[in-house]
Image (spheres, rainbow, N blue to C red):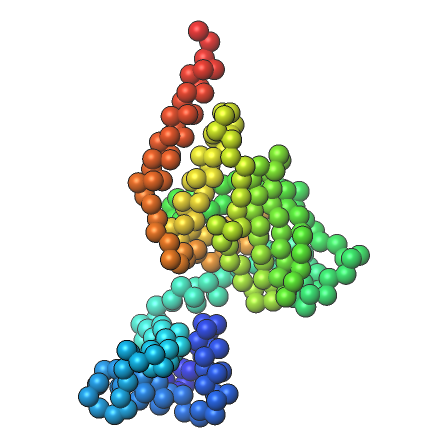
Length: 267
């Protein structure tokens, strides 16, 4: 355990490890084993711990990220199975954009020192794909525009031609990470009174449903067919997926689609 502690890579686990060291604790491994594992597994022995006591409950909760991280490291070492975090880290999440922008621009983004006169190579159009293998949903021919650089992260706005669908992409070059929230970073204008609006809403429903179920977002260069960035799978927290509600919505949209097609047929 002592050897594995410095190898932890979950952000909250690393933060808790640093907190314990800053408090003066030298042997964090023994602390986790004696005051964590043993105290919980052998409730009749000292040191005693009670999950019903607020201080003990809070301490256990604070230590859990380290326990989870150490457990996944042990499984990876013993079984040779890459955990999802390792698989993500082995893939260069922003590699395509790094190559496209160039090292000077990327360095400026990472240090948040972008100057007004600096230019970025922006593709004429991009495609955004929601992927939950083998399920996919794509929005093509989107325009991409940089809107902000903060704390080493570049924020891009991707929109379709009439700006009825927009994606806000936060590309963290400082930490080489790309996470996408389909709730707060995706928007569209709803219009169920036209065939185009219904088709757009069908595509948007498919997109969000794919992302909600651990989908990943991919950013592709339309001109070169190169993958520019790929997000970590979405992990929803404190949300319940309404399967029946989603199916009912899709059925209603399909009915509207058929009604528009029937109305367009010559009599």
